[in-house]
Amino acid sequence: MGAQADLRRGLGFVRPLGRVGAGMIEPADLPPPRIVDLPGRGRVTARVVEGPAPVLLLHGWTLTADVNFCHLMPRLPGGMVAMDHHGHGRGPQRDERFRIEDSADDHVALLDALGIDKVIVLGYSLGGPIGLELARRHPDRVAGLVLQATAMRFDSVVDKITKPLLRAVRPLTRYDVGRSLPLRFFNDTRNRSSETKLLWQWLRRELVQCHPRVLVDVMLAEYDFDFRPHAAALAGVPTSVVVTTKDSAVPPRDQRDMADRLGADVVLLEDDHDVFLAAPKAYVAASLEAIARVTT
Image (tube, rainbow, N blue to C red):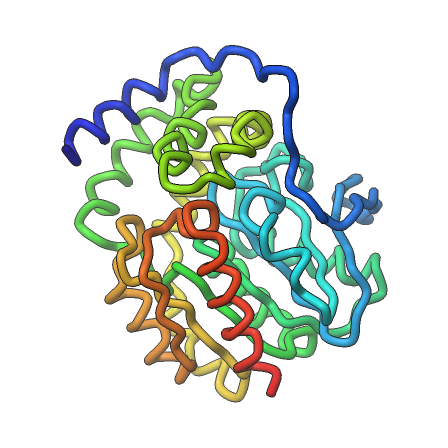
């Protein structure tokens, strides 16, 4: 069954997407979008809710902030801010290859433009490395750190096999091959969640906004990432880690290793890497608990 699912996803990499149908339903209660000019980085779209303890939301690979956090955004009474990463959705667009350090600086530039001093940084998957780098490079801006379904190093057996393959196929991305990959991956998720099924037309629009070249470059940047030598730099930063115990993308043992190295509180979430769409109530509950642990 697992091999068949992998084959479907692989074939989905080249299948046409079709059109987004009429009657699209968008998530309820999302904060209104705000256009923000970032000096030297261009114009971006952000979602901002003012409050005494704002949470900076850093989304995962292939996603937008809206997709990753659509169920969490309306439930952050202390405030929040979110934008898409470089090359994703409505985030900064530039010709340079994706770098985790640059993306961390992008989000600090957003905080500067909004006049926000300190935030609780919450990073999901790819957002984890970006959040770690943000905390290391800009410690005065971080009141707390919440890391979800992520790790300090991505070097599993699958990762080691995938890295040279991605380098080999990168030239093909100039032909826009692979744009539908995120959509095909989450196609299985809608069978697990009635909310996701209801939002599927909206997700079809959101999940194809990242250019395939960026998809590959982000993965290669993650494979080169290793925060373990810098873990001590975050000593004293209140940190909690949400471990997705059934994660098929980021091994739970690597998530726990990160928590150990950071001396972080651990919140267990018994689900897979797509939990934020597959089981949104459980995801929101775990997120709020993890945020509370770094603020009390």
